[in-house]
Image (tube, rainbow, N blue to C red; front, top):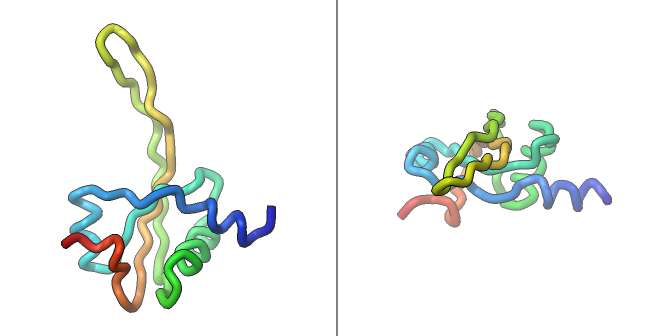
Length: 98
């Protein structure tokens, strides 16, 4: 797999919550990313996915799995990693709350 293909796979999806939508006013966007992705790779992936934007800062958080119960069945959620990316320049229109 080439490095450009890997960059397209790093960002899984944006995380849309009330807290993350308030952060968009400050130019911060939250994404779920691959667990083995580095901050440099995350910055390159965001700049590739949203051209014309410059990444100023990347913060990452590991989100461990949690126990869940559905009736009498027990299970666990998937563990994942999220990245909070601060962007300079124009806001990302697709991710800005209305």
